[in-house]
Length: 299
Image (cartoon, rainbow, N blue to C red; front, side, top):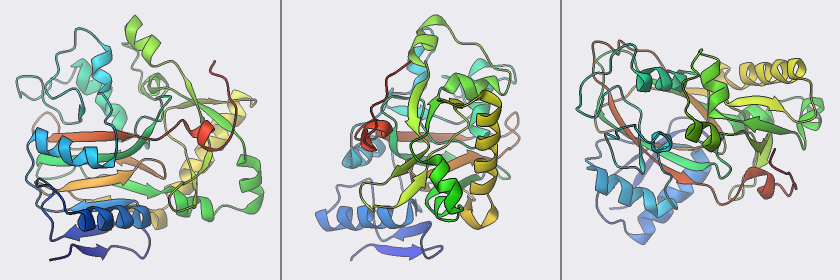
């Protein structure tokens, strides 16, 4: 039986059924998933029963996998495989993280609008988040369609954004929460990297905004002007007509295109309920400036 694709809206988010992603995929099924991904940017696969190995194996169909940012801190004890991002609220012994635990405070940054790994020189292509356990209330994830948001901008704004380059660092987003507990190895690993503000997607040809809470500056622009512009773009891009809110079910797998979406996790009582969410992240093919034909030096 061929896979089933049920769009949520005509061009953003679709549910995909009649497929078991933990098993090797037929060539035709993988091609159909890729085509749907190009069209809808966010795909929801209900009732997928993964272990870590099978989730990572499925993710490798899309490209090389990233290493978790927690690997940059040598004394951090990983709960999961190094190619899997731990975005729940459990420690290495599967206990709920204390309110003052460094990992919990670090992960609170996921509640701001962002796109994964824009703070890496080679950013993310897509993320694949699997729900192993979820809280009974709260904890939804919201996704914003940055393609549609770009299309809706006035022409004058599009011209203003053309060729602009922003500086991304995960230290910028965490600083907004008052978090600055980075050691020297992390400060070196998370130095700001340049990314374009507007990019063209290689597969669909569509233009997309590329912004995130990780941005701390725009090259050639005064800080106050840059922060004002970023706030205006974020408010514009996260209007309700561009946003889908996903209410998780156990064993949901959600895949999103980090090149053309932003997302954020909503609050839940993380001192009462366990949330075990495991994400595989696939690297993009090249830095965004290189993809857009800009020669930009690192600073």
